[in-house]
Image 1 (spheres, rainbow, N blue to C red):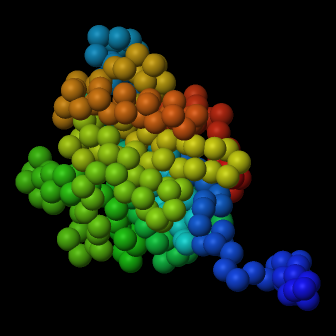
Image 2: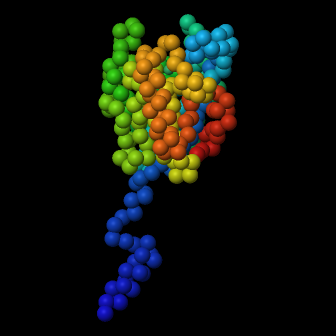
Length: 274
Ligand SMILES: [Zn+2]
């Protein structure tokens, strides 16, 4: 009879000891924080919805998202440059693009949480428009996660979109950031050549897809409208269908970065989602 061994086993389990280490300590998302990374105002909504709501002005949100994973922090999008917070009149828009203001800096919102810029392990940006990459260099040590196609896409002036000194992992499609399926970059080209979205599996909230600019606001998402300035209408439509399919499969929800009514209804840092 080996019941002595059984006793040892039962006592070990009761004390939380087991042969294999508890993996949950290094896997999974713990919290997601939403930061206010700019407030935009555009004179004509039809810049994003061709032929619809022509001449109707629109306010837009511009969010950044901090994901606290057991292995470290990932920042998704970096918003309008923090320096805009010092401009009394904000940053005027050009050629129909929104004007921008910043009430709080990204740096201040991180500090409020006790998170130092050097604590950020990964910075991933949905794409390289200025309202998403404004503070990448606040995190010079963080590994940048960006699609190769976006990285190599020249500026209209011909220059590079990122500081060539910044550490970078150039992606070719989807990417499981922490290797446990909890945070996955989803390739969603069309708005720009290497646009990407982010799927986050939260323990209580469930699956959330952070849109980037795969859609700019709910009405455009619901009606699959594509802004005239997107680099590919065909890819934009395919990417929206892809995101919709994932949402169905995962019973997830989409959080649209620039949708101000949705954003206004969400919890903002220092509150958080689990
Ligand atoms: Zn954009």
